[in-house]
Image 1 (tube, one colour):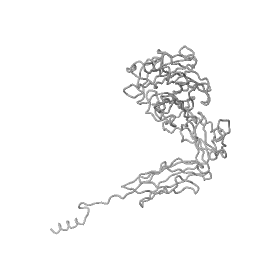
Image 2 (cartoon, helix red, strand yellow):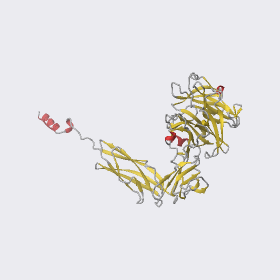
Image 3 (tube, rainbow, N blue to C red):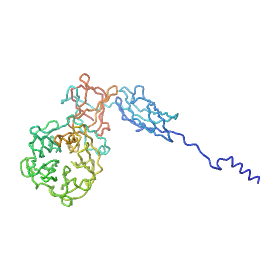
Image 4 (spheres, rainbow, N blue to C red):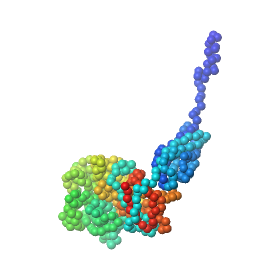
Length: 521
C-alpha cells in the first residue's frame, strides 16, 4: 500500500500524467523580396522590387522596413523606412546616378514590427552604360517641343514575348490615324486590313467613305509608311447586296488577291462573301469597283446551322499550303465558338472543326515560322473597349485568348475590328476600327486607329526623372515630349518589344524639334 501511495503522489506532480494546457504560438511575420536579384544600368531607375509582409499566428502590427547597403547617392522611391501593414506589400524602385560605381551590391531589407526583427536580402548588379544605343540626327516631322526617335520597329515575331503578355504597344499620336472623307454626308469607316506590297502596303477598309448612301462598301489606299496615303479608291461596291464590309485579304506569291468580307443581303442576313483579283485591279472579272452579287456568297458545307446562322464580322480567309481555310463565328449559334472550314476553293468549303471557345469574332489570322516552329496569330474583337489575340501551333485549335490592349480614350470605346500590320516575319502593329460606343451615333463616327509594336525607349535625367514615348508616329517612330530650351539629357536605355529585354544604352543629349535614328549592335 505504501508503494501505491508513493506512485500517486509522484503522478500528482508530473504534468505528463494528466490533462494540461500549452501556450499558443506567438504572433510573427515573414518578409520577402521579389525578385530576389536584379540588374540595372547606372543613371537609370530600376524595375519595381516588391516587398511583401505576411502575418503568422494573428500578427496585426505595421512593419517598418529600412533599406541597408545602398550607396550614399542612391535614391529609393518611396523613401525608407517603408511602413507596410500586416499582409501587405510595397513596390520600391531605385535610382543610381551615373557617377555610381558599378558592381554587385548586397542590399538588405530590415523589418521591425511588434518588437520582432526579420531581414530579406536583395542582390543588385549595377552595370555601366554600354554606349551601344547610338542616335544620329536625321530628317523627320516634329514640332518645336517634340523629339523624334526613329528605327524602333519590332523585330521578328517572338512567341516568348507574346506568351508572357508584356508587349510594348505604343498608341499612334494621331487619334484616329485615318478618317473618312467628308465629301458626302455618310462618313464612317472601319475594318482595316493591310497587305504587304513591294515598298509598302495596300490598306483595305470598309464603310461609308464620304458616300451618298449608308451602304457599306470596300475601299483601299496605298502607303509606304502609314504616314501618307494615296490611290484612295472604291474596290467593291455593294451592288446586289445591302452591305459589304469586315474585309480581310490574302495575297498569293503569283500576286493574286483573295478577299473575304461580310456580305449583308436585304433580308437582314449576313454571310461570308468572297472576291478575287489576279492583279489588284480586276475583281471577279470586272475592273474595280466590282458590284457584289448574291452569287459571291460562300457555301459552307457540313455546317448544319449555316442556313439559319448569322455571320456578321467574324469571317477570316487564310491560305494553308494548297487549301483555303475559313474561320467563322456564328452569331446565332447555340455555343459561342469559332469554327474552321477548308477546301480547295474559298467559294466552297467543308466544315471541319471548332478552333476556339470564345464569344469574340475572329478578324485576322497570320502565320509565322520561327526557328522551325510554326505559329498562328489570331486577332479577335467583340465591340468592346478591348481587343484580344490567340496563338496556335497547328491552326486547328487556338489557345485561350489574351487581351491585346484596351481602348485609348472615349474616341475608341467600342473596338469593332482588329488586324495586324506585318512585314515579312515582323508584326509591326495593329489597325483597328472603333467609335465612341454611344447609343446615339449609330456607328456613324467610326474611324481607323493604330497601335505600333515597338522597342521600348526610356530616357532618365540626372535627377532620376524618366521620360517615355508620348506616342508613335507610324510603325517606326516615337515622339518624346521635350522643352524648347533644353530638350532631353540623360541615360537612354532601349529594350526589345517585350518591354523587358535590354538591347543597348548610352548617355544622350537630344535637342527639341529634331529627329534621331537609333542604331543597335
